[in-house]
Length: 401
View 1 (cartoon, rainbow, N blue to C red):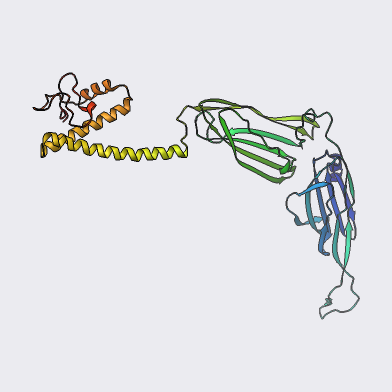
View 2: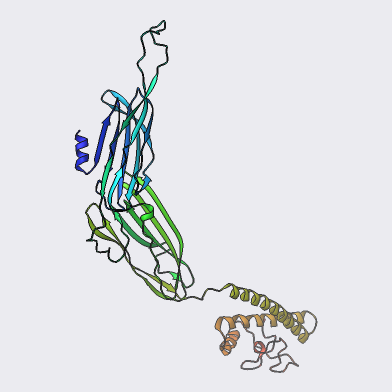
């Protein structure tokens, strides 16, 4: 009785009806919920151990969304000196409209043994005849809940925000890969928004709309919802993931995420907030499209073909200038190495700096000596003028060793 009184003091509504060693215990909380607020509806059926085939029937109310809360349970309980079988089922109810919500009584149906007539004992004094069984029924009480509308004092009601009556609600945002400051242009960065609530169904959790910024493309790449039963109510989470790809370097300010909700325990409005964040992207070459990639591959193939032809031409020109034999081969090889070094330095220093490249060629292991007889200044048998042009004197095409 002390436990039942404590439950009444906390706003529970409990009825117990005893019928021939069988009864139904019902717990409904709260009894005056807001519209769409969760109501925990628990039904327990008790029947004596001497009974068998206990079956519990529960009619869920019309005008409310009902969701099974946890798994059905079967267990035994010792009450005084008697052992009882127990079936427990729980639901979460949410009224779709304000007004009244009627809950029909639950019923327990079980079989009880019928008292046998005298006689029919075996040699040991035991009754060997099979007992007869009859059905008995235990019925619970009906309930009528008073469902309150959304409060007029809710400051977010006029703005059209969603009505979220809950025990608690939290929201947080974070970057999945890094802290949001090391992203590169064209590189996707995942922004995560996680909402957790106690006392709301999965379908009631709000969906966050990502911000739109010029130069920033946003795609939703994941939306996961999960729910589990806890002693204090239903716990639900929604995790949304957004891929953000910037098309230019700089900073992109993301506004804070704010979700208004109603605290049913304190009966006051609240706002769950996650601070705003800034996505900083570093300047980089823009991402190549498929067409650009194909052009790059085609250009690479053509460049390799042209380079092969030029290499063969330089070797042939060098050998032709020095004659067939070991000297000619060495002459062609030196010309080829010289041309390759010029190309390498030109790529490293860029166009428009040919004079600096020439001076660097002379400074890096170049043996300057007069041109061989018969080779005039400016004669370029290596096949590339800038690679053989005389610098501050006469440098022949075989000036490298």
